[in-house]
Image 1 (tube, rainbow, N blue to C red):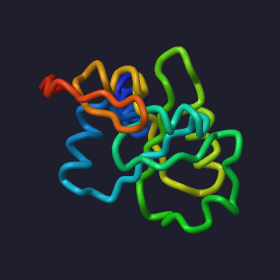
Image 2: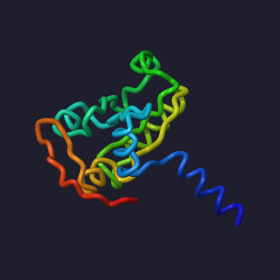
Image 3: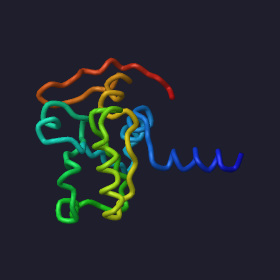
Image 4: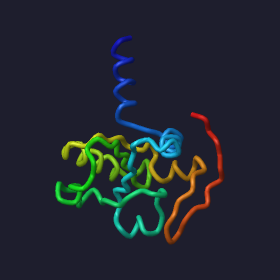
Length: 130
């Protein structure tokens, strides 16, 4: 029983869902969202106020202006892509606090939240209440 509790407690320390992320952003908690996809994918569509740091280019140099006290949430296209995992791993190696957005951009939109970019999604204001 303790193993189960430990496993799920640890899982929550490393993952966040779109509801909790949206709620945290609205409460203006110290969270910054990082889109770990290519610049082209980011320009087409991304979570509002996120920044683009492709996982392939993450380094101490390109993250030097980021505050290590901030919680960073990485995301990519979705469940079939592991760029957010690679980005989270890179950020952790660089000494940042990081979580991965479950389901990425796909689940963000599925849960009804808007995106911005050259091909934005309006959002549907679905309230899942997870």
